[in-house]
Length: 197
Image (cartoon, rainbow, N blue to C red; front, side, top):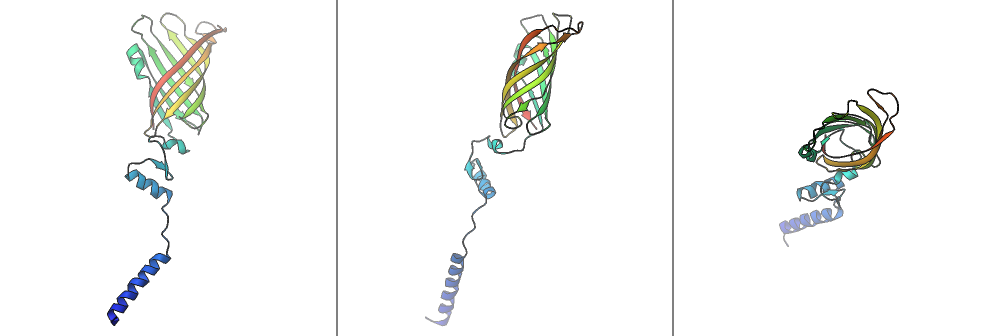
């Protein structure tokens, strides 16, 4: 073996030994997620997660949620709701609704204020919502005011779109022409589709 061949052989052998001596660094979880994203696979820390559900593993949440019931537009119930997250589990919600059912001459409006308390995280999972509601209908000359409590569930996806449904009961405490307790119970609820931002 001549001198040039020997030098080339030693150079290649040294490079191979150096490469074998330095173990390759494992990819970080963020790098794995980025690679999987490029491969069109949804993961969190390298673990498979259903598309749209990565938010379930994050503590962070959106602050505002604007929602309405598009099916109500067909029936003559027009309204919207806006929620503001004041903490990781408590929001303040206000809604305004106008009733003009196609099958009735009765019209009216409703204003509600509530404080949904989320048991898991904001805008996701089971919640309890105490609040106050004011109603005025054309069939009655007086507006009614009273508390209500709703129990509901909120579904939230990564894009910000969400759906909530709630049912509960309330009690009319007073009307516009009376300060006495009317002691009238009523059922209430809602179905809303929204976008959080």
